[in-house]
Length: 217
Image (cartoon, rainbow, N blue to C red; front, side):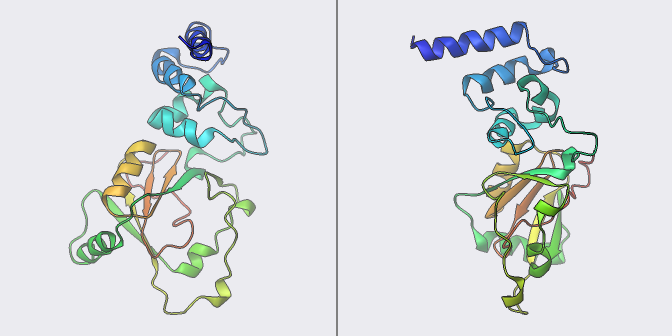
């Protein structure tokens, strides 16, 4: 067995026996946290400047992120004024978006209200006006530093951003799969497990607030 892998196995086993995090629920988290430690996706330090591994770690832990982040020392430890889980989100582009499928689902939904999700329609100017640097929302992922687009040059006839919010809570991996299945080009997973799928006419972050009807804090 390679020495590096052996050391990781020892580290994971040691964590399972004696985790230093006081708020860690070992009975709930042991198996998943050990798996993520072995994959080396939760091994960084979160501070006021950011958390370089939080997105991958959240993806690995799925819907256990909120319950188990203490076990890997990545829970937000800022004062009580820090963002609630619904005010934190991670966002990724999808590999193979299908714009025609997404638009077809939107057209069908106009006449037949969808079951299982709701639709947000947002003027593009409003979508692009979001600036998370000036709010309490913590946005993780490759789009964290997305430059603020120039809204002045937008065409007044530009189609609005349409996004899907699934009613039920989904893990990050299920959110990605669900958004892929409806042809979305980007997904945004709020850390309260609310899932948003962005359509092809969205140019930025989609909706700023978690709006999943059955997935509230």
